[in-house]
Amino acid sequence: MLILLAFIIVFHITSAALLFISTIDNAWWVGDNFSTDVWSMCATNTSTCMAITDQFTEYQSIQAVQATMILSTIFCCVAFLVFILQLFRLKQGERFVLTSIIQLLSCLCVMIAASIYTDRHEELHKSNEYRIEVSKGQYGYSFVLAWIAFAFTLISGVMYLVLRKRK
Image (spheres, rainbow, N blue to C red):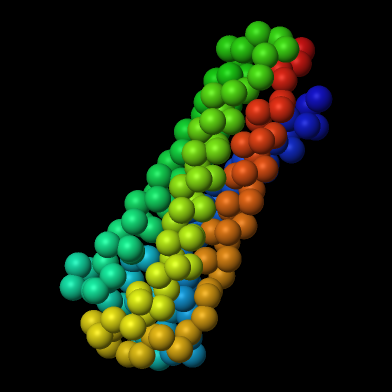
């Protein structure tokens, strides 16, 4: 039982780490001489970064992605704290339903963020406010990590729903 508990904790911490990396790192959309994320665009040849502000045409979409990624990370961290509390507070045989609900909310938020970015990426990168041409890029590893984090949070949310507290 201790091995299963250790696996669950490591799996949850991995999910949180994936969410933090995908939210913070500058690699949602990459090209030969640039990388961009939901916060800024950086030119790799000149090492300059430009914040994405409300002057961009699709700024509302970027704000939705920012907000849902932050919410997803917060929900994942809160779910971990609730799980630790429920380890000590639940009676034997009860399920970790509250932890599961919070983790599934995290899953929903990261899915919404990645889906919005997937749907709006063409319009996001055609903006004239960029100093360099960014429409010829491709999805970066932060975007991929966001989708992997979706799968991890979904699996852990279902795992918490099925899991019963044992002695």
